[in-house]
Length: 265
View (cartoon, rainbow, N blue to C red):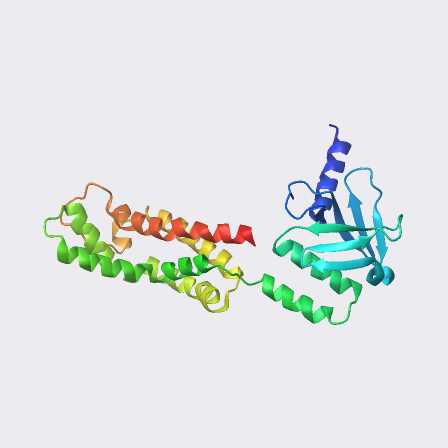
């Protein structure tokens, strides 16, 4: 492939990414039949095969386009008047938003407020699991505090590692690294729990990654800068990771559920 062909392929790929794929079925949506997009006052449907493109002027959109549901429209074929074809968009938020954008473009009465409400809906999340994960991340330092007190009360014979672990985790909630990170989580967690805002999932996941990088970086600092209790005996594992590694696992592992929820939207 020469430079010109590579440039044309790159341009084609970028164009397709800016267009909305459509399908002929609501279920099997692995490969799109074509792409649709708006070009000023014209809605253009480009087909992947030999079918000619369909161009619909905005002035005729009301009579040519019929909205079936939130992810399906029916279009009268210009080369075969009276015959209509159903076009399905992606099932989920992207397809619904595209349908409401087309509805708004046609100028149907009352569409604009409906499209605004739809856009607000698509910016919300509907996942009890994501909310429980956000709640877990907020209460984790205090759950650890209660757990360590129970361990201290019921575990009589303990190894130096376990004794140091319990002592360190009792102070973990007050550790400056964890306290600052907890303050960072408050805003997106409130947005998720109280207002169901979708951006809160991304913010909390990024905050978790930031904590991981911070903890790894602080692991190379001198011991007196790590705000850890003094060990009376040398534990089998490094003191820093004996305290922070379990916390990071308990915090970050459930956070990958945020990615699952985002991919569903």
